[in-house]
Amino acid sequence: MDQKMENQEIPESPSEEKQGELAWGRHVALAALEGEGSVNKVWALRALMDSPLGSKIRQLAKSKGAVVSLVEKVKLDQLTQGENHQGIVVSAAAHQYADLSEVIEASKNSRHPLLLVLDGIEDPHNLGALIRTAVGAGAQGVIIPQRRAVGLTGIVEKSSAGSLDRMPVARVGNLNELLKKLQKEGFWIVAADSSGKSFPYTVDLTVPVALVIGGEGGGISRLVLDNSDFVVRLPMVGDLESLNASVAGGVLMYEILRQRLAQDPSMARE
Image (cartoon, rainbow, N blue to C red; front, side):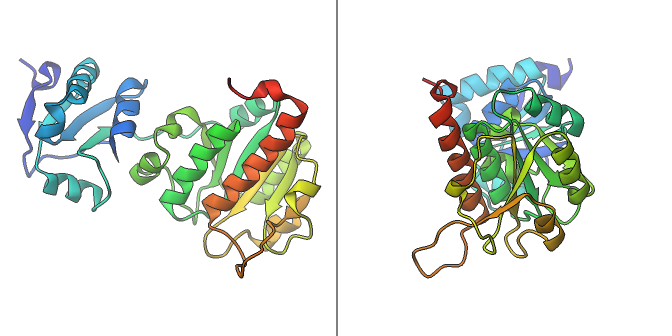
C-alpha cells in the first residue's frame, strides 16, 4: 500500500529528496498543516510526536497525505541551518505570491485602506516580523520588490509565526511605477526615513496609506523618497539615528492604527 497515504512514521533516509519550501516551528507547522496548501512531508523528533501535540500533527499530516519521518535533532538542525525549529520541520508547497491588482483592489474596498511597501528588506526575520505586525495593525497586503530583497522563505514564515497565511504578499519589478499606480488609485505614499521633516503623529494617516519601509542597510532609495507624498521620521531621544526596520515599521503601523481608532473605535477586535 502507498506509504504516503498510510502516513507511516519512518526513519529519515540520508538520500531522500526534499520537495517544496521548508518551514519550521510548532506554530508554523500547525498553520501549514491546517491551511489549504499542500504539505509533502514532516520531519519531527520522536519526543514531540509522542506528545498530545504530536497526535494532532499526526492526524493533520494523515489528512494531507504527508509522510512523517522521525529524526534526530541533528537532522533538523541541518535542514534549518541551525534555526530554532522546536522539534519539527515541514515541506510545504512554495508560498504563492498574491496578484498585485487583487491586493490593491481589496485594500481600496476595505474600511481603512493600508498597504505595506518594503524597499529592499534583506533580513528574513525582519520580513516575517513586518508581515506579522501588518496583520495585527489591519493592513490588507504587503508588497515587496522582485530583486535585491528576500522572498518568502522558510525563515520568513517562521518569523511571521503563521501570519504569512493570513497576509497576501505581492511582488513587483519596479517600486516607483508601483507608487505611481497607488497614487492614481487614491493612496497617499508615506515613506519612513531619517531625512523626513515631519513626525508621523503630525500627518493625517486616516486616509488610504501605502507605508514604505526601507531595507536594513541602504534604507529607501532616493527615487522612491522623491515619489512619496510624505517622508516621516521617528523622534529619537537617545543617541540613535534610526531603529531596526521591523521595529520602525511596527511603530509606524500602530501610529496609523492609533489615528484610525480615534475615529472608528469599532475597528479593533473585542
